[in-house]
Length: 540
Image 1 (tube, helix red, strand yellow):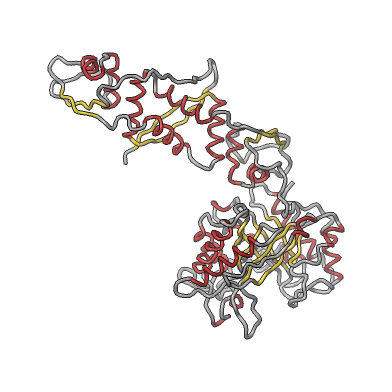
Image 2 (cartoon, helix red, strand yellow):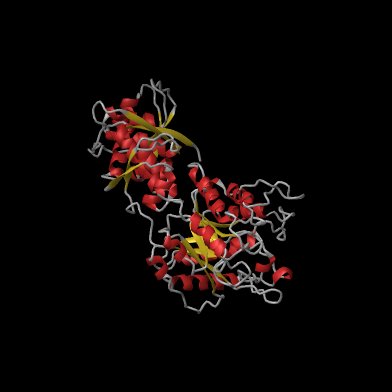
């Protein structure tokens, strides 16, 4: 379909509002302008007939013949895309749109205010639509710009119907401000356009912004914490409360895949006390060496098992309270998490993406959960057992990149895991690399940075949660400052306004389900308390 460019001049105030509203509703200028023109033109111009120019005829006489008004000759010019001055020749064929048509008497209801500064919008529209539009504006007796200005102004109405103001603080980005007021970091262009900001990366501390159509009061929703501190498992949150830093708590649930199971859980006590609440939904928990139900079920021939698990996830979410952040599965590239274990069915990115998208859709369609976050399970670093075409070496970073590419826009957040190989705090900031064939991969805590780099640009607005960290070996019974160094590292990452924010770093773990429980290790508790004296936040 051929396209041609069409432009419209708007006064600067309308231009800013128009660009902002288009960004706010997550569409494009081209789409809006095309829709406005299509609605105004309607079917006009679809009815036309040929006219062969006779000797001595000119355009006014032809217009008089078909429209009863010689002054409407420009209708014919525009419909036939003739260049002026027009020199007709006998035998030339013209197309006459809507013969017998008369002007409706309507005129544009709004015009550019006198002496107002103007800005131009230019988009492509279908060539045939442009011809019909230009010809109809000639029939009605006003220019394309006049009518298009009026269409834009009418579409805008009194938008925005409400605004609020916000003063930029140190560490702010427009995407963070958009999340604050819209729960959607992708809407930062709405704020940029409305405030005349050409480069969204360039805002200054103290700058006053007007926020159009805020959907929140600029506060985090209940169940989310502004702090990056947290613990895997409930029970140790009192440590954070002692320091007035109510961070995050992660709870894991084994829910099976019975689609008739309607049970859920109540996490309201944690939410009501100001903690961030994350729940991980697992099909089952492995108990090596004999029991491997799989963090997601084995995929059968027609994916019935995935459908059942997705319904069970939806049921659990719908009948739970006090949480809106749900992680689906865990360490899918680790053989212990495969259904059937190391000799079972590998969870490739393709299999996990298939299962995850079903869970995503099932949760979001449940009443009251349209805006919940459905988050991917964390990929296990340094595990190279999941090999598949295109990733023959089993690279965990590529596993994440491939998975995110398969999900498209059906993902609300990303969970990560990162660790060190020992209790030395220097390993937190180490760039030590692995032995071949993984000499391009970090061997210590900063593997999280390579995970972050693997996130595609279309997902850089999503929340990131590091839901497990430890020293790989069981926690050392000494206070080396490891915990303090880990939180300082994530805070340094978050201080760079160009980086995707990491919302939490959860110490693994509180409950005595495996060898990494630190609930009774005084030295680690003291290290955590010392870290909590810092005001480490991802949100201010």
